[in-house]
Image (cartoon, rainbow, N blue to C red):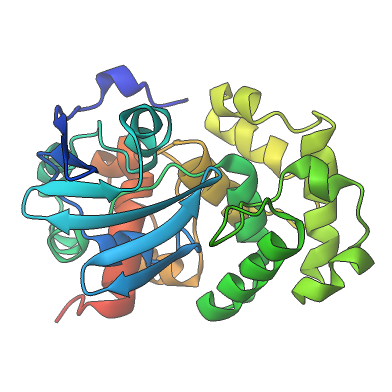
Length: 287
């Protein structure tokens, strides 16, 4: 079943303007490096000690974290409400979710270590293509392929390019995508674009489906298995109950659990996944 957002703990905050920037406060449980460079999004780069620039939903934005607040540069209140509020999942009370996880020793340790990660709400088609590209790949190469794809087919935003629309890609063959050097994934990208552009895959409808049905719907696309489908559900459609499983998470499940997450994680399995993924890769579980 789909998790009802109304039953989940919510966070209240205020948005103020200062020197042309938007300041959102209070914002806790947010570490920009852990959130933007953990492998859930691929179009962010650190430009200064505490400043990150990215492209999402056809917009370029710079963000920085201040104590208890998030500062957004070169944006408007209207754009914040339209894009960034949901993108950074600012309405969700991550502190309350972390308190829930304290009942399980492993999740408690993982959330203490990686509790600055928020699940981003990305554009669904970009998320689909990004995780098709991510298969059997590493983050630097994923970023390179996506950058070349945007430069080839995206809209020129001045200092960067938007992610191309499914319509811009649907008429292309895998050979047309040779310049992005995606290898076997080019055929999968073409199929994804064609199915989305034609309406065969309707993200708004998929978002409302029961989780297993939604997963199967996305798996109609060539090259999309359960893991990629769950990544699209989690990072593109806000289905925080989705739980992508890769080799790292399999290790967590079998080394630190008895093969399955504890019941307390179920409504927020995707958030737990991000904490556990970062913890098992860079922390010291069991240490």
